[in-house]
Amino acid sequence: MIVVLKNGVGQEKRDQLIDWLKEQGLKVHISQGEYQTVLGLVGDTTRVDMDLIGSLGIVDSVKRVSEPFKCCNRKFHPEDTVVQVGNVKIGGGNFCLMAGPCSVESEEQIVAVAKAVKASGADMLRGGAFKPRTSPYDFAGLKARGLEFLKIARQETGLPIVTEIMSIVDLPLFEDVDVLQVGARNMQNFDLLRELGKTSKPILLKRGLANTLKELLMSAEYIMASGNEQVILCERGIRTFDDYTRNTLDLAAVPMLHELTHLPVIVDPSHATGINRLVSPMALAAAACGADGLIIEVHNDPIHALCDGAQSLRPEQFDGLAKKIRAVREVALA
Image (cartoon, rainbow, N blue to C red; front, top):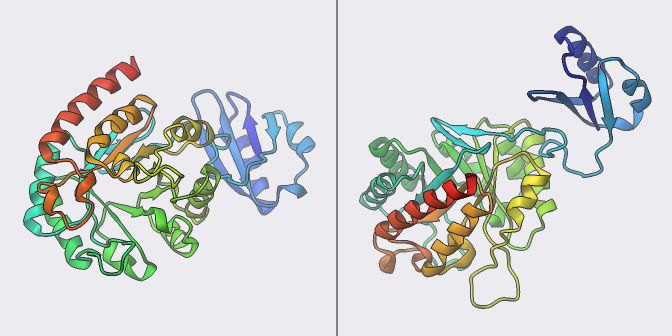
């Protein structure tokens, strides 16, 4: 249920209504816009008299929300959420470019890539220390040592780091990581999502291999319902019948998610296509359709990469792409 207050309502009257709603056992999410205040009510709203609330002099309207996701629903929070990581902002018109290797392989490698992508305009450094792999025989990351190398790269460049967490038991290792990524395979690991909801860290939540947008939003709801509202959604392609690309990049998800939720939405064209030469055109398309950012794989020696070299851009390719992205953004915002 959402309660829209009239413009100019005083703080005292607003607080009295909020206190009364909380006494009814409801959680109240407050969205303060320029012209109106929206109260999002979460809980058993069936025992709340809509007509009674609607008759109050400070209330403009009362509506029930049929969607199962509440905290991340744009109806509850009409204004865009802006997730801030240090000096980097994501959402609300702020575009964030994340780049780096699929996997951290050595200190020299991650520092070299970090310096290269920063010089090209990247806002954040991505890199995998813990890697979920389809085959148990494939390289699965340097784990804790990889995290330390990421921190060294951050110290060298000043770029905030984003890396994937796979298990609750590893959470203490991620205390000094700027953004925790939940990969596609863990999108519905609800125990992990609940624990991440208890942290204050921004969470980058990737869409699952074959999950609907509603399921993605319900996973975000798990995090937000546990107290953490700093969630970034990521479209990274879904499994379809097509056999020419690694996945099918659903760019229609970007404007659709912007209609449904106030959370930032970024796109991963690297995992979506799995092919180096397709990353650039799909990255530009994502920027044009309204994505709040991109997360792109960049490796200084893709042929010898230990993970996903076929979809990684070389630093000079990323540099050229970054210039084109900025040009597309200027046109899209014009």
